[in-house]
Amino acid sequence: MTHPSSVGRTAAPSAAERAYRHLKQAILEQVHPGGSLVSEGEIAEATGVSRTPVREALLRLETEGLVRLYPKRGALILPVSAREITDVIEARRLVEVHAAEQVWPRRAEIRADLAARLAEMRAAHTAGDLTALMAADRAFHATVVDAAGNEILAELYQRLRDRQLRMGETTFRLSPRWADMALTDHAAQLAALDADDPGPWLATVATHIDNAARALRGLR
Picture: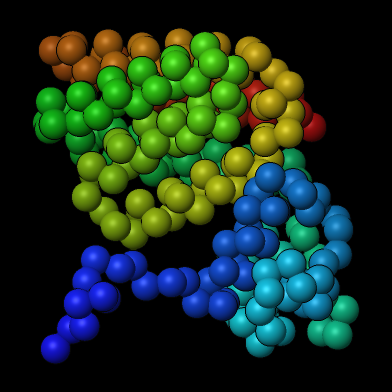
């Protein structure tokens, strides 16, 4: 029998999961910039866990291409290269355009959600809250990819967005043009859902990815 006090509770994350989340966020937000070396002890102290779950977290981050492990030294935060930017954008284009094609017959099911995410982006932009703006932007894209119904592609897409966030987080915070571009592009995508054929919709999806690519390459 389930104890009454446990009903409705969410299981606390494991020590390894806590270490993973902590370090991944620090990498994506460039608290630990590319090229820096972090030790197991440093992470263990910051998260209040032992070194064993820290090693598990680092192995997971290594499989995601964010760190390279060096025994007895720690983990190197891998810097972003021009090749990585090209590869991430190319992979994003394959996933997002495919997803856009798949959801077109069911576009009415996602239109309200996309409109809500766009409204959140506009509100965050007006408030000057770039963190909320970037979260709503990510949710806008994820709505389309998730609706395509391919769980493997949805998981891959989340990893691609993580890597792109690391590429542009700092500079995007200093570039108001990025926010204006994202709002304009997503408004065009939403309007394209009302067309009679998928051509404009697919074109706006591809254009937005191309605009993101130019912005990221401009950071190099």
